[in-house]
Amino acid sequence: MFENLTDRLSGTIRKLRGQARLTEDNIRDTLREVRMALLEADVALPVVKEVIDAVRTRALGEEVLKSLTPGQVLVKIVHDELIRIMGEQAEPLNLRTQPPAVILLAGLQGAGKTTTAAKLAKWLQERERKTVMLASVDVYRPAAIQQLERLAAEVGATFFPADTARDPVAIAEAAVQEARRRLMDVLVLDTAGRLHVDGEMMDEVRRLHQAVRPVETLFVVDSMTGQDAATSARAFGEALPLTGVVLTKADGDARGGAALSVRMVTGRPIKFLGVGEKMDGLEPFHPDRIVSRILGMGDVLSLVEEVQRKVDHKEAERLTRKLKKGKGFDMEDLRSQMEQMLNMGGMASLLDKLPGVTNLPKAVKDQVDDRQIRRTIAIINSMTPKERRYPAIIKGSRKRRIAAGSGTQIQDVNRLLKQHAQMQKMMKKMSKKGAMAKMMRGMKGGLPPGMPF
Image 1 (spheres, rainbow, N blue to C red):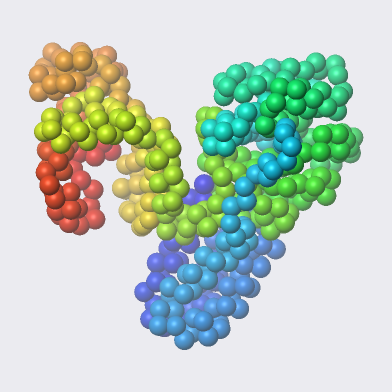
Image 2 (cartoon, rainbow, N blue to C red):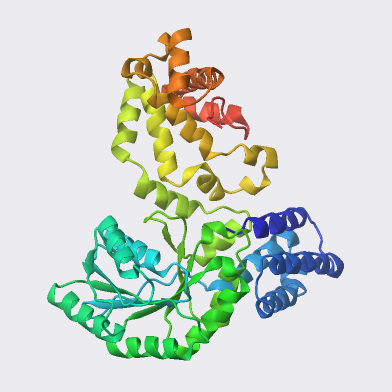
C-alpha cells in the first residue's frame, strides 16, 4: 500500500532535507509536488486542499523561515498534517460492555465483510483473549452463511447456524441470545452487502442496528475503490451511527487514497487494515506509523511487534546456543530462518517497515522476491537429512537429483550451496565475542554476502 505516494513524496523530501534556506518559491514548488502526489494517490479533493492549505500556512510562518534546519521542519509539518487528517492515534475497539459485546459489520457488496468477520474473530481471540461467536444475517448471497461457517472453523471461533428462510433481524436477535447463553465475550455479525442507494436494504440494516444495539458498527470498504470509498462511507454514516472503518485489500492498493480520505470525510476513525487472504491479515490502524511509512521513514515499532508475535523464540534460542557452541549453520537452520521470514509477510513486508528503504536503487528493490525464498526452501526440502546437515557431500549426481526433485536447475543448487558456505563463514564470525559490531562497521551500509535474493 502507498507505493506510488511513497515514491513521489520521498523524492520531494530528499530534495528538502538538504536545504539550508527555504524561500516562498521553493516552498510553493514543494507544495505543488505534494499536491500532485496526493491527487495521483486518489485522495479526495477537499482533503488535498485542506492538507495543502494547512502546510502552506505553517510553512510560510516563522516556524520554518527562522529555523536552522528549515527543510527538516517542513518535512515534519507535512508529517504532522498527514497524521492529523488520518487521526492522531490508533482507536481501539470499545468492548467495555456487558457480554456479549456485539460488533456489526456493514458495507458494499464484495467489500470483504465475511473474510473480515473471520479475521476479526481470530484477532480478538489471539490478541484480546476473547471468546468469539460469528453469525451471518446474509440471507441473499448464495452460500454466504456456509462460507462464514467454514471460516469460523478455520479460525476456531464458535458459529451460530442460521436458516436463509428467516428474517435477518430475527436471526440477529437469536444470535445475541445464544451468545449470551454460551457466555461469549463478543458476537460478530456479518450483514449482507448493500448499495447505499438501495432504500429497502438500508432500512433493513437500520432495523438490525436497532434490534441488537452493537457497541461497534464498523463500515467495511475496499481500499482499492479510492475516492468512492469515502463517498460510500459518508452515505453509510448518514444511515448508521458508525463507530469506525475497516479498509480491506490494502495490500493491493498502491495509491492509498482511501486511507487518507475516509477519516476526514466521515469523521470516523479507521480501526483496521485488511491485508492478504490469510486469516491473520488484519492490522490495527496506527496513523503515525502509516505516515512514517508513506514518507519513507519506516515503521520500526510495527516490525518489532511483528517479530515478538510471529518469531519462534525457542527456535531462535536453539540456533543461538548452537552457534555459541561452535556448531555449523546447516541447511535445516537456513530453511527455518526462511520459513519464519515468510511467516512475517516475506522480504517485501519486512523492508517496507525499515527506514530508508525507499532510497535504495530500484534494481536492488526488484531483487527482493519471495519466490526466490520459496524456491530455496524447495531445494532444501529435496535434500536428504544427511545432506542438510553436511552440505559438503553434495556433488554431481546428488545435485542432479536435488534439482529434479525441486523443479529447479543445477545452477540454482550450486548458487544455494555457495550462498550457504558464505553464510556459514559469517555465522562463525558472529559467534565470536565483539564480532557483530566489527562486522556492522565493515558493511558500511551494504548487504552482507550470501543473502538469498
